[in-house]
Amino acid sequence: MYRRIALAALIVAGSVHGSLAAPDPARCRELIRKYETDNAQLSAIEISLSLFAAANADCINLATELLDHGASVDARDRLGARPLSHAARSGHLAMVDLLLARGAPLDARNLAGSTALYFAAERGHVAIVQRLIDRGADVNLTGRSGASPVAAAAYAGRDMVVRMLLAHGADGRKADDTGKPPVVYAAAGGQLGIVKQLLAREIDINARYANDLTLLMWAAGPDETVPEAQALEVVSYLLDAGAKVDDRDARGRTALMIAAEGNHPAIARTLLAHGADPALADKAGKHAADLTILSALREELTPR
Image 1 (spheres, rainbow, N blue to C red):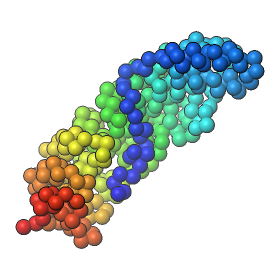
Image 2 (cartoon, rainbow, N blue to C red; image 1 turned 90 degrees about the vertical axis):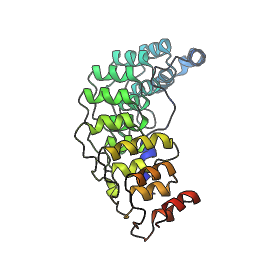
Image 3 (cartoon, rainbow, N blue to C red; image 1 turned 120 degrees about the horizontal axis):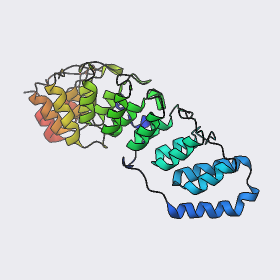
């Protein structure tokens, strides 16, 4: 279904919490032993590559020694990311501080365009986001497929990070390469608080994005990672705020049809309660009732 194209691909799924990650002492001891055993034979490139492992595990002492022995803060992994991005993504503030103190390039981008700030925003590491912003990180540099740090944080439900980025000049209306701004990611992800934040920035609630989809359509068809109750909150808010219930996308489908196809009965019933017309057909001649596999919902959607 084209409505979902690129959402999951743009945003790295994960369960990393917004709090800072703890160091991994066992991993650090292992890395230190390996370095002490092999350091005489390590090339300059290998020393720099070892810095990535130290950054990921928050091994401050090892990272310091590696840097003292020539490891480069501008080293790149196979995806073009620097050690700073590894530390930021992993939630290691002390490592971020060490690398910045040693001259790590603040806005360096990997092959997809993502910066350390993008990774920290995506993972919800509030303290690291603040540190990078304080050091002057560009809040509008885009990452995968042109998605901004705000978009990454919005889809992941990082409410505080979105607030911080907007407060420091991030463009909350900037669309990615697929034509979707952050509010689309928030609506698709069932993130009501973030939807409210972004709509408050004078965004048209009935604006059309790629394939003529509206925010209500995105919210009405959440994927399996978004609880229906969470998506329903966004749908209800959008309807109460003036979203047009029977607008159609490029295929002629309404939000009700999208909810039916996704087998979301609570969302479909809410749309019906707000006047959605089950008698409408899409360009292929299909009604909402034709699109669901749920017999009870099909019965409710069948025009009388």
